[in-house]
Structure formats: C-alpha cells, structure tokens
Image (cartoon, rainbow, N blue to C red; front, side, top):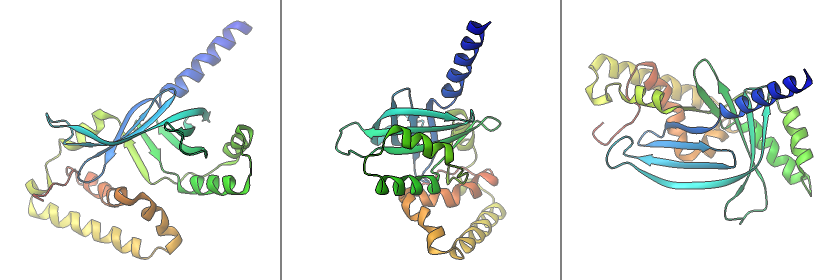
Length: 223
C-alpha cells in the first residue's frame, strides 16, 4: 500500500510539472512573444512573420533552471541563472496555470519586486531562503497571459483590423480610450510594471480589447 501511495504521489508531481512545460505564446502587437519551459531550460524570444514561410525567432535568451517548485498544483516558480554565467544573482519566474482556459499567467510584479528586495537584503541567499519566500508569497496579480499555439492560431484567424466594418473599428477605439483613460488615473507606482514591460506594455494594454471584439491582435503597417 505504501509503495502504491508513493507511486501515485510521483505521478501527481510529474503531472503538476508537465502542465507548465512546452511552448507558450502571446502577442507583441507586431509579432509574437515566446516562452519555452523545459525540465532544465527557460527560453524566451520573439517570433516574426508567425506561421508563415518567412517565420523566424529573434532575440532568444536561454536561462538554466536550477530549481523548480510547484505550489498548490497550479503555481510554478523557477529559479534561473543565465546560460553564459555572467550574472551571479538568481532570477525568479512565477507562472500560474489555468486549466479551464489552458493559459499561463506571468509577470507577477509584486513577487519579482519582493524577491529583488530579499536579494538586496540577504548577503548569501540560499535555496532554503528562496523556498521560505515562495511559501510566504501570496501575490496573485499578473500582467501577462500566455497561450498554447492552438489558441494563438484561433485568435489570428480573426479578421484583421483593416477588414473590420466601421462600427467595429469605432467600438474598438472607444474601448481602448477607456483603457488608456483608466491608466492615466494610476499612480506612478501602479504604472511602474508597464514601464518595466517595455515593448510588451502596448500589447498588455491593447490586446484584451482586440480579443473581446474578435479582431486579429497582430497589427501590421497597413493598419
């Protein structure tokens, strides 16, 4: 019986890890952002001319995963170091998997900020310190959502902005105006995550409005 329980627990552990692995995609307005999670690597990059004969990956960064911790079955923390070894500081990445939508939430700003504060205040940060940090972490607000390829392909199958009827284009810009108005009311501290997202911030702000109206979020020069 004890052996059966151990095997069952191992299977559950493997499943909990497996649901995060593989390629995850999101929009950068002009191109696609890629996150790839494996057992020991975390790879980020951009895909230009997605799903065409001219598709290419640009600015791909590879990080070595030195620790994976699954919390509450749906939350994954990975601790990484650069593959080149130029930085001695560990980086933390947090992901929450949503089974119903098959999506991955990322960029938990509060978690990252608190982890950096921990690194700054601790002379020799050890794995046990990181594990305690993870146990205490309760941040649940993320800024990025990543999707599986089949979901991205569904979104790209929507008609482009230039192909939409006038009333839908007007509705989109009305919705975007409301989003930007709300952003202008935020404090400098509340706006900080958007500044840190840099090239992704525009996508974070605009893509939800495109998807709500079923408009292809990839914006090209013709639009």
